[in-house]
Amino acid sequence: MQASRLTAAIFLSMILGIVVGFICHRFFVDSTSAFAENISLLPTIFLRLIKMIIAPLVFATLVGGIARMGDAGTIGRIGGKAMAWFMSASLISLSLGLMLVTAFQPGKILKLPLPAANAHSEIEAGALSLQTFIAHAVPVSIIDAMARNEILQIVVFSVFFGVATAAIGERNRPLLDIFDQLGSIMLKLTGYVMLFAPLAVFGALAGTVAKQGLEIIAVYGVFMGEFYLAILALWLVLIAIGAIFIGPRVILLLKYMRAPLLLAFATASSEAAYPKTLEGLQRFGISNKISSFILPLGYSFNLDGSMMYCTFAVMFIAQAYGIELTLTQQILMLAVLMLTSKGIAGVPRASLVVIAATLSQFNIPEAGLLLLLGIDHFLDMGRSATNVIGNSLAAAVVARWESDHGDEIEAEPVLS
Image (cartoon, one colour):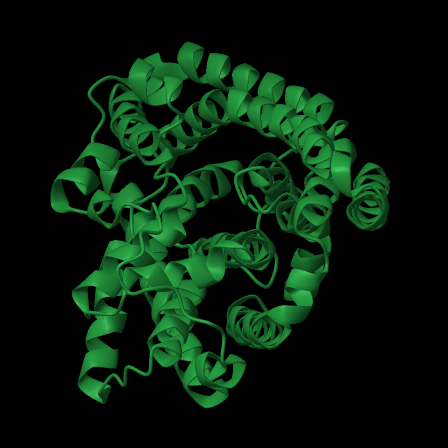
């Protein structure tokens, strides 16, 4: 009931946000900038509240889940299955995106005025390097990682801490009880924060539409329509593959994911949907030790929507500038995106950073990113929701692989 009410409230807030933003953009032109700036405080507050709870929630649930697995062999087995799914889903996302953008040719159809090739997009392509990857993967201090919400660093530390906790045997029982209580408290706190979600959704859409208007959607309608068609195709493929492993229960999983999907879409942030996704997986019946282990990993290594967008964007910009990539170059581009898209959780505007880095490697003008910056928020809505569905399917499939009885996955009590 609570999830249904939240979903309905978010959906209503989306509609109201678009209507109010349109009215402000059309009839109150002089105050549009001030309105957009002030109303943006609502999503800013909400996202800051979400970030406030992410680090302790991930740490508590992940350490508790790993410690309950019992030994490093079990952790390695589950982690290996998760990475197998992540890599397969990544390859599907990239390949499907490449095939569809090649078929649609949106860069040639739109015939947009092109920015000068030497124009600067202000996206730092150099942000992606081996040194940057290590910096975002290995924490100097867990306190520093939590302070900066570096999810991948928190995951790395939690894995080490969880393995060490499991290694001391029964002596870890008092500590595990503390982590259980901390996880329960953080999920209860999540419920309080989620009460603010409809206001955040209203503010995000009202501010964006007021500032940019719906005209920008009309101008880029072809590209956006084709991108969302590709996203829909990716959903269908991933759900179909998931159904092979978990059967008809995939429909039940989608039901439990309605609220986090809508929240990720409306706020253009898959991070905002993390707590509700974790709760939905537990309600679906996935044990806490699986869901709390797979989901944080997925947020670093399984960004299906973001990867499809990267392929779409690179090929769109190449088409717009009339640059033909050979089949060999396209395959190499997929390999580059496969590697550079992993472990970038915490990099600001991560998808755009990956795109900028890829453009430079294939001598495609980085200025082409300017074609997409105006609609990036609307595109981010789709790829954020896709990241949620991809990670929820990953958790469900790995849980099924770990199950050795029937079609039911053993459930643990829902933390609330």
